[in-house]
Amino acid sequence: MHKYIPYGRQQIKEQDIQAVTAALKSDFLTTGPLIEEFEHKLKTVTDAKHCVAISNGTAALHAACFAIGIEKGDEVITTPITFAASANAVIYCGGTPVFADINPETYNIDPEDVKKKITNKTKAIIAVDYTGKPAPLDELKAICDENNIYLIEDAAHSLGSLYKGQKIGSIADLTTFSFHPVKTITTGEGGAVTTDSDALYTRLQLFRTHGITRDDNLMLKNEGPWYYEQLELGYNYRITDIHCALGISQLDRIYEFKSTRNQFFDYYNEQLINVQGIITPKRADFEDSCYHLYVVQVDEKIYGMNRYDLFMKLREAGVGVNVHYIPVYYHPYYQKLGYKKGLCKEAEAFYERIITLPLYPGLSKCDIDYVVDVIKNK
Ligand SMILES: *Cc1c(COP(=O)(O)O)cnc(C)c1O
Image 1 (cartoon, rainbow, N blue to C red):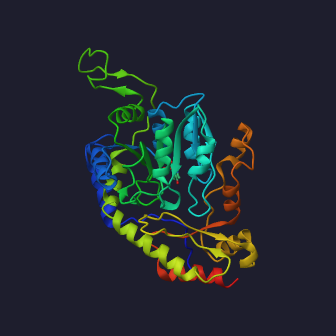
Image 2: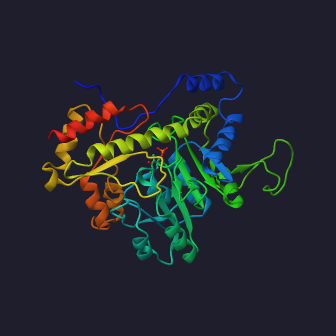
């Protein structure tokens, strides 16, 4: 029996362990100097003016929705092929997620369908860079400009990706990241929001820590050195110095991770190109993505086996395959809210066919050969 191969896995090296150990021995465990250092390093990797590191990627999305003032009655357009958090964040703020279909070539949100879903209640678009491939940001920005609404980019998959030469994190009004262990770099739990707007930056900082500030420029008055004011209803969404120590150390290897992920992505594509009925992800001309997931589609009629059976066969062979994602509005919670199947035809058809194969830096070509053999020998 071959060793178990998960679909994603963090890479922890001795330098990561040493960085975390040093943080534990320092004076600060929670809000110390490492948060700012991590934010500073993230700004370099994203080319953003501002960065707020936060407790996780979901909190980052919640903070982004808060920053632009999403509230009851507001609609926010997003894709159903994402982790539920992209839509849940809208509901946290009292808003209503509206789902637009995907483009079957890129698997990302389709700007043409977004246009059809715009109403006078639409306040923002949350685009997701699914698998690490950037969403069609120029087209989405044009729609946002025309309708005077915000673009939030859920870049949980795409730290280190470029869009037409520009770094992800410097393009949308707000870009959110996750540092969960399966993502490109990890802090354990962790996330961040980047923005070029000074006003949004202030709101993100307030939101992360109860809506509280000690900044004289923001407070109504100052009664003394003990004094602070709560200006908004924020949360305790702070990240810690311990987490940031790991993040700083991981960011040293972001381009190494990117290069390895790209090599494996291409190697899968080469190995699977002649397997009839397995549709591989396309790399567009000049695409420069940091791939997070490697997702294939099973065309049952041509391949001669359905997605379920191939999935089970891979799992039985010790390959930790997964499915990303169940369309968000299929979940019972969303069904109870009144969302009906049939909303997004392409997304629904896509969901029926997909399998996520293992992709992470610690994988080897030998592991990929093994996975490909299981797929070939049906
Ligand atoms: C992982 C992920 C999130 C949530 O991030 P957490 O850090 O787990 O809260 C949100 N959106 C997408 C697309 C993700 O993949």
